[in-house]
Length: 517
Image (cartoon, rainbow, N blue to C red; front, side, top):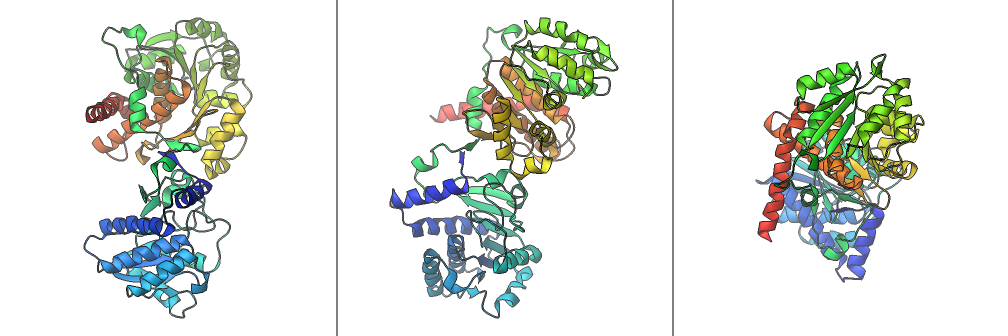
């Protein structure tokens, strides 16, 4: 499914009306019906609902919701955070229909408006239809007051298209924004669902089909959601006659005296992801620890200096390169100068696809040139900020823009980790992952992800596909852990061990789709 910016959704609206002859009032009716159905799911037995409207078409959608609730015998109040003469033409039309049905919306210039608004805490639910996707600039006046009143009420809120006060394209708020329990967005998902404050304030979200023609919603945009069927079709099959050498040989350059576990988790993940052979290249003490937990791995002990890999290990790694299909550099290596010297020498001569993660990313951020070969960079927001020489706040303020900038600067595939991880590559749309859960915000999850992606590279997936599939698969494994263990408290090793089951679930869905065809 494609992700639409505010400008793209405006164009979608315009084309649906102008090119396909769909009246704007029809789209508004369908939008209101979709929100009404969501309210009915939350209050199936009726209840007291206040619909807070704005002056624009989002407010018109809200008026439709109020009318439908009234028709189905809900107790409805309708407040408008504007004067009647400020309404758009479509909203005025809906106002006339709403009044004809016996509902009398109360406008902000009515002396009773503020008294009624202050009683929202007595309602069962609020519908937020104040601002839509076109909102911009600092909020003020009745709109700001309406948002504050809704937030103060302590009542569940269903947002129409976007929580009022959230910037559609960045997810940042415009001074203050509604905190919704649920958001019903229309036609296509929007960037605010995946970043910034919008990620939290949207609550549980869904995309409602309001009648946009399929050929419009299927046109490519700048970003898309990673699709389960797409991932299932890309994951490599295991041939019956294959042997371990056919299924990807992964070299993992990781670990140090202080951080031996990172190498262990990456190796475990690579094997659980289906790599035929995994070689851990590390200092002897790390090799010993990994061997105790992952006996299936092969080991390449490397010379050591002060608890990290010494620069003199470079020839050994370059020799191992020739029997490797893909490599992973970074987990647990540390920021120490010997590591930077090692990577500088190795990367200058490296010609095998690789994942650059963790401390290897930090080396790149201080000027160590990346390999010329195709790579996947897997930064978290802190590492991304160092790569871009910006602040974490700037990265998180617009994660889509940050990925675009990183791809442009480094010329590699970039996966920005976090809720809804984002994959970017030159000449490709951003790929946004929708699997995973808050329980995965714990140590070692990035090492498991990096090992998974390295395996997919070793099995000859292109970098963009390996990063996108790896993110989806890794998140799905985390979702299985949340279901089967607990939402919080499962470990990164649990996620690694869940990779085979997650893969089986993916492939089963693919087979189901084929049977249906």
